[in-house]
Image (tube, rainbow over all chains, first blue to last red; front, side, top):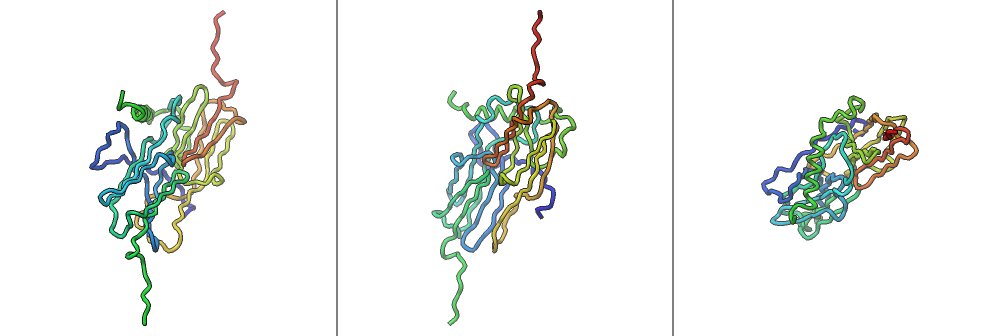
Length: 131
Length: 139
């Protein structure tokens, strides 16, 4: 799989029911979701977003993630040629009941945000002993 | 203005970038436009700055080479899920990449700097001293 030629994914602009009040465009980060024995992991690509510019909220069973890029890096730069648009990132997910709302952790490294949504203890796989 | 800053600057930047989407500055000299990583090229005074979105790479997996006016960026992007997982959604891409672009200006190869932070690759290419535009004084 790693041998294949890598193509660019076109950035998708966020189109949610909830409008943003900020006059700037937000994009949808490409996201992987997978499940391990005791957690659900959400991994999203948010290039250009620093640790202190990420907001993760849980409200009414909806997990929302917002990552803002630093625009001051572009001060004094004049575009000559562009292939991708820039902007903040936002995405939200409805949480299943199995996720423990109080036990969500986040980790950001090299523009990749990993959220670990630990499962409630009653939804973790258990081995049933046979007597 | 209360609501304009600093978000206003992002919108202005977005609009500025949009207007350059059909730029012919590089002409046909970039190989595989649409290849990974996507590149934005800026000028900063006389110098050139290439910015690429390349999240999740390791610094030692990135190979940047310069020959004359041509810059080549190559590497591989991998994603590790770990063992015993069930995948629900998969949108991140993996694979090898290699692309090059040839600049229309001379650059000083000894002073090129590259920086990889927060998944963004920035390459600073100072314009060669002898290639800088000079203003001619009228005697």
